[in-house]
Image (cartoon, rainbow, N blue to C red):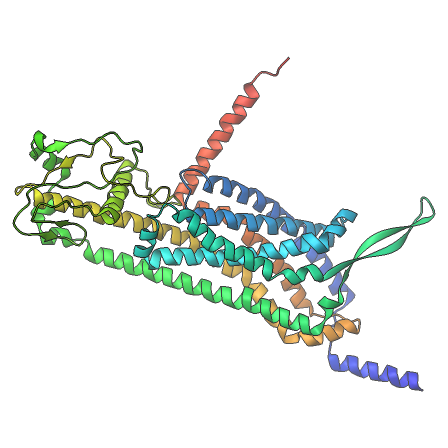
Length: 503
């Protein structure tokens, strides 16, 4: 009698739970779907992504591409490759039943936690790179001044990498305690004996309702809502800054010619021809021909001082030396004329590789020291003003192009991570009922959520695997460097095939 009463109570509890139910045919279709989507297709994308990210890291680490933004992209590629490798091993374990004892022993204490750390690091690194681009575009003056420091590159890398590494590890410490290994005696038909085989079991710590609920809420906020909000905010502000900058540039384009058409039409070659040879002196040859330093103007200038916002001519014959602004501008202008700064590329910042040096050093032979006179000082100032404007435009164009690359990557990130965020919301809404259904031996999640879960895992892998396609599509400089790398590999391959074998 008591037994029947307990059975009736259990049946009533199961009916009140309203656990998900689907037929065996639906379960078989789900198994085949997961095999192809989360097994075969996922592994193909993961292998291709590991190769593509490795090639991207090689290209971005080249001498012509090295800057803080590209080095952060290399760190992102490392996180993505780690996650892709873990996804391949997880597919082997869950979909292909390709398990070894070493895999089982490493899974709970190394493979599983490291994969979660890599996923967290990939998300946080994306936010960090978006923040770096936002600072470069929204606060260009502070960013340019920081680049004049010789330690700027290392400082910027540490500023973004160290917090990401620390947070990634700290947020996944509990993953080391969610799975444990048990040994089960398995019969051996060859020797008619039993062998102890390791198997994976979920720990009581992971099954604790309090931990499951609060940890899921924590990950939903820290890896879902906050990164999404920050990425949308940074992308929107970067887009608006670039749009305002282009509109302001278009509105201010005719300003110089309207102020003084004669000065605007004056060229540097004409001024040099009009300057007597006795007034021109050439500095020593540069040890670094690609860099131009500040020119000092010494003369008895006109009676009135002249200021154009960047350079001031002192009426008492003092030296004029605005190193921070004029030097940077002339460097950018010279590089642009020599073709070392493309219009759309991922490239190294000219100020970031080495700090500004003192005047009269590293001057190319085609730059001369010209003394200002009453007859030519206005023209010289106009040339310097045009140089400064061109240099500022070149640097801002570079920063805008790098920001556009980051905006493209962020859009792909938001698309690929949206199913994961939706699944987290659904899981948090039914987590108590799902845990109760699991304890009663029934299915925990509905069929549609399992299908979306498999697709979400595939999209996360795709997001980590297509970085090289984004760089190639948005950066002509990256395409050029990739072509050079391919040609170098082809030449190396031909030299290896034509090299005679030692006898």
